[in-house]
Length: 274
Image 1 (tube, one colour):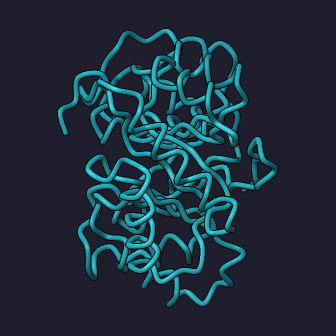
Image 2: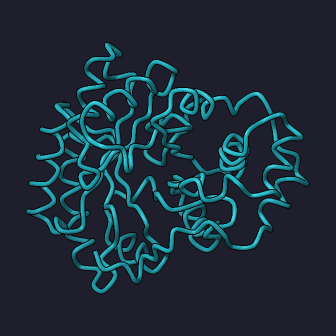
């Protein structure tokens, strides 16, 4: 696995291990420890996942030096704003029992008013300057949410984490991020399992002697996005990292890119009410 360079020069491993919907406690600890044992060094969590403490526990028990790991967490929607973002970050840092966070994201944009996003970002920049965060980013931001932030940001976002998988490419957002040198991370790169029975993807995966999951993750990488697969099953955790020994042909990439929309979660940033 290689590292990618963010727009501030920070290195980020090209595949991350997601922990969304992974229950806190032994399940999360075991899954993260397994991922670390198999070679993941990039772990993604969030305050609203309610498993930060377990992620931190697994990281400490792994024995891997902190500087060799890349840990992401996120600011939840109820904590937007300058003072509340500072407090929320301190709470996440305490739960993780870490001295710093590699990447901190605004989890969802305020879809009615840009001011809470901007106030949160000012808090992020303060923490960045203090060395408590190595890189700043957002999640689920579309161009209309990003533009006001970019207009005022002293430190521009390095990452935008969005839903991205075959059947749901968010082309406008991805192109906007590329134009502004913002790395796109793919949450739900397997469509939360919704796309793993698709006959078109199965046919292409069989050509490469790979699973549909491996095909989707490789497709993400070849499209320049950073996938964040999640699983609690050891064999699948291992399998999801075995995507560097094949390359999808240009023809197959185009076919997958052109698939009609399917497998979407239904979570629309401008319509969510949480």
